Length: 344
Image 1 (cartoon, rainbow, N blue to C red):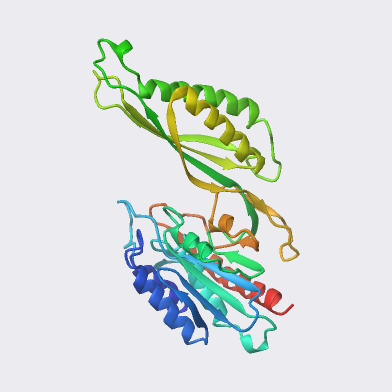
Image 2 (tube, rainbow, N blue to C red):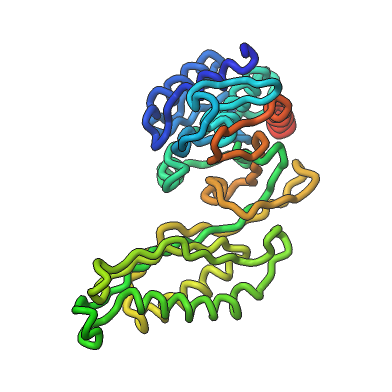
């Protein structure tokens, strides 16, 4: 297991909801200082650099999701069985971070024309708090940014965007024996969903974008919560819905319709997340593959963005795991990007 010592150390940190954020950030900082990286900024995020005129950046989030019952190994211990490595976050995305640290340790930056930066964030699994802290500080990201999300070593140059709505419907509570005296927030929510779904299927879903595997903007009503009792007309109802955006123009189309229907069905609008889709054109990648999900890459808008990480993609699963072959290949992929970008 000595070959995977960094990954083993990272897995030990309980970073569910950033619990041991300080500990893992300190570990990464101390490791990189020994390689002559300097600390540019440190809070719950960490930014470190080496060399002059950084042209390349790597970014990884240190937090993980919670684990559920059913694991066959300890989630906080890297366990090797044959050629498979198990541990919480080993795919998403401590494997990516460890590969970054392994890769830079094998590079002689004195021979590089350009420097590079490393970014480590928090709160990716919940609200993107870490990456927003960095972007809000007006950080100038390097020309090329690589994100270590699990991709099974496939190199992605684009993802869909995201529009997540939290809608609060307002009603008037009365006894259910005389519902005409009140106003049902849950009924209005149901009517809104029905009308908007019809609009979506005619005006949004039909506009295909061939660059994505699912070639259209998708809609999901994930949560409906409302009412207080079976014998009371509901005074409130909350609906959370999200759209995985295939075309940036769809964002404004959806916004206008929801704003229009908010007056008809009496609800308040809160946009929790808004991110545009992107597809980068770059000579660094031979094949332009894309993904339907969203990553922190969606927030870093001015750089050429590349997403590549370990596999198989077992993020958020019981017995999360990767293969040795995938990890070793990723280290070589990262080294290759460093040599290509920082030498030209």
